[in-house]
Length: 272
Length: 316
Image (tube, one colour):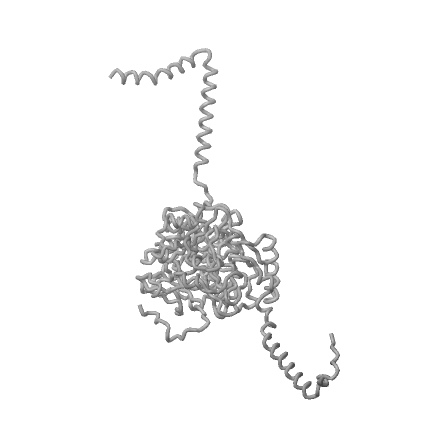
């Protein structure tokens, strides 16, 4: 019990000293010093608070890495040119009613049917060459306004196919229903269209971790960063956000030996 | 020295005069002989196809001094220009200190589209017909790693096909390479950065290395390679993609002309799914270091003890 009493006394002692000082002649000096110290600590607190706030801009995982296509924005080419690559100023509300979010339609398999009005928007900015390559040149057909006409092979893009268990086929899992030119994560973080990678990362964590390490996704450039930069793609450069599964590809021709093997002697493809 | 016939001896035989008959006979035989000899030497007229005397007398790569190499590279540039009409830039890239190359291939991502195969052919100036492709993409049925069950002639309408996975196989740049051990003339060896290379001028074409390789990674030029001039890649290296001759061995060299200049190999850059990863395993921050640390990797035919620098892995 005695020890507790001592402990109680000790903190009170300096405070008494300070009070005595304030009443003495030196009080003005002391007050000034105390005020100065308080102001200093307050300033430090403000500095710490400001510097510890999360940066507003999306963090670049690797400095020196350039992503040539910041995002594959799904607006028509003509609109994209007009906006200078920035879709944040896109006026959705010329067609949509600002007060009520658009209604969603589903097909028989409960998959979301993509609105026909947006079909050309999807296809306009698809990076066709990322799949087709230079060996299989793609001949695109354009509509009068510069939008790409969707080829028949890609008609299935009109159906939303994000989420294998039909969990995720809702526009407003990613789009902000209250502000259509904005994206929103499950945590309520509002993002511009060119910050879409951060949106993907909010659900696909392990894949994003691999992508940050340069292990998921296509790369080109220099493995030796001292010689030059590595160029990487963002999520939407290879994956269509509305149907992200990687599409089927046409295989290039097989080996061409000196003495061609007669097809009959080849092992049947489904022999196993 | 002439001797006069002694007196009383038999009259000297008549000096051998050239009769018309003997002249014709002699000249016919002679002409026939010359013609036969010319016919016998006729293949020598094509000698220029077999390369110059300098090429014939050229030393092994490891014995070449820098000034000799300079002369050789210039000669090669001239020869390529004469043959293909394209002036190439042939260089001799040296391995970098503190670099050991490793390749990692994600079998989950590979769809078997064969874009890597054709990018490799284009980058490395391989013969188009017959095709010498360094990369073989095997269509493997689910449930086995027996390469015998793989099919490299698949040609469906689209890939991937359900029930199969696709496994590209190329030179594994082994740390314990059987191909190097069996070469009787040391025309193939392992460089300090892990790439097993071939001196195409030193190879005698015995194909022992092809037989020794457990991965079917080596290709032999049974014919003179055919490369269209307009498809020739002019960025060449001595140990890499300079045009080869008939009768020599070649194989994947991790695009030595690109990777020793700090760039990624051609097969990696063209892969649409990003299944291929490459880098310096001695750099702890490289992509391959990340993969070897965090992914469940394996090597092909581990039991043969070749210690490949080519790793496969599945993820997701």
